[in-house]
Length: 232
Ligand SMILES: NC(=O)c1ccc[n+]([C@@H]2O[C@H](COP(=O)([O-])OP(=O)(O)OC[C@H]3O[C@@H](n4cnc5c(N)ncnc54)[C@H](OP(=O)(O)O)[C@@H]3O)[C@@H](O)[C@H]2O)c1
Image: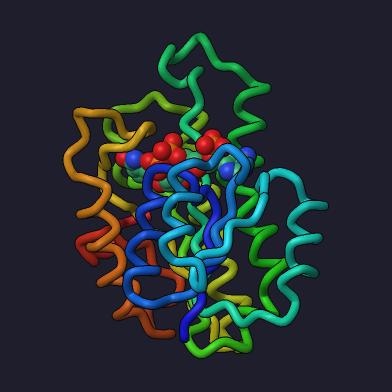
């Protein structure tokens, strides 16, 4: 049986990953900030009591990440999905309204947490069968694709996350670990909003197909939910 460890599992894309992997028979270690208030996740976990285990995790709390890795010391983790993320409110106000404190918070969540998660769980990943790390970044983190400007906080934190993914690919290749950055598409979630192009079910279903096809030859790629490689 395969095991998924995922952050931001209580809503949006993270919750849908939990649904679809549990339905496929995977064990799901579902991390979210406040399991006591994660009603949708708890309801889902009640439907799969042997498969889905919610765990409390605020991804900026490195001590809590280290505690969780001790709690899960005996696990093997086939797939880590770094999913938790924020689109800072200040980005909606545009140039001239940059909130530098909020920018630092976005870096903590979008950029630093994915690396900390890998540093904490690399042993459990390395001894698994699949050895996969998927970090959900964004097409908005592509320098090449930026033709509309703005969104300094989100774009820069996701572009930096892409660089984290690439260095992980180089550093962990000898352990047989595949590290990729993923763009989920523009998805109807709290973050993506109601005008987004695709449903969360479609995005996750597409990403699962791509994830199932990944091998070590894909490590270090920035991939879309359509499996096309995205220019950095
Ligand atoms: N939706 C899109 O169109 C789109 C496009 C490109 C990339 N993405 C990326 O896809 C990922 C998921 O996005 P989404 O659309 O599902 O967003 P969402 O609906 O806003 O959900 C964000 C998730 O991240 C969690 N999170 C935020 N800060 C956290 C922290 N400090 N510690 C732990 N969890 C935290 C949230 O938990 P709480 O409920 O506790 O806040 C929530 O579970 C993000 O990385 C996002 O940047 C989304």
